[in-house]
Image 1 (tube, chains in turn red, orange):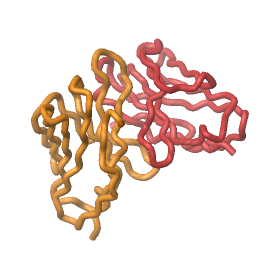
Image 2 (tube, helix red, strand yellow):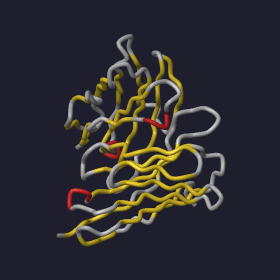
Image 3 (cartoon, chains in turn yellow, blue):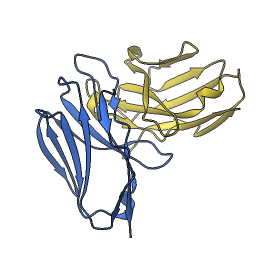
Image 4 (tube, chains in turn red, purple):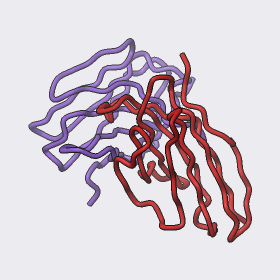
Length: 113
Length: 112
């Protein structure tokens, strides 16, 4: 079965640079979620979208922004990167109103040097 | 205190053992309870979810919810080395919103 696709899988950036992470949800899924996971930590919710509209917001820094496009794929834009932004970034998708059935992608490992 | 608590382990068991993984939670409004398996540096994989109290079985996995005690469990029968991973419980919000509340995860190692 098709899964959530994330790109790139690995990304190395320097401090103060920008990064864009992409997420392609499971076909027919209309809701996308972004999570950040630091080493040894559980995933922390950043933001979610349904039908191109932001549906919920978590602990997302002001330096980050995200959007969902008409084909339901989503992009997470990260600016003025800091060392502390180094983490695994996961995208998950689900059908609307099925937040209990979120399927995660393989993640993007971001390293900020 | 976190809203969802989980023993971080590590939990080490011999192959073939029955494994019990547990979470406690404080928000009595939670209705759905999910279990994810996460291999090192991989994305969390949804194993199963249950609604309200009761049991749910899927192959070697059984999820159990006791809402009166705010306690959920995941049992793994005939554990295999391939089950070695971190197991996270998670609950979606009640009353709207999408943020999953995760436990810290229990690291399981199944040894030959």
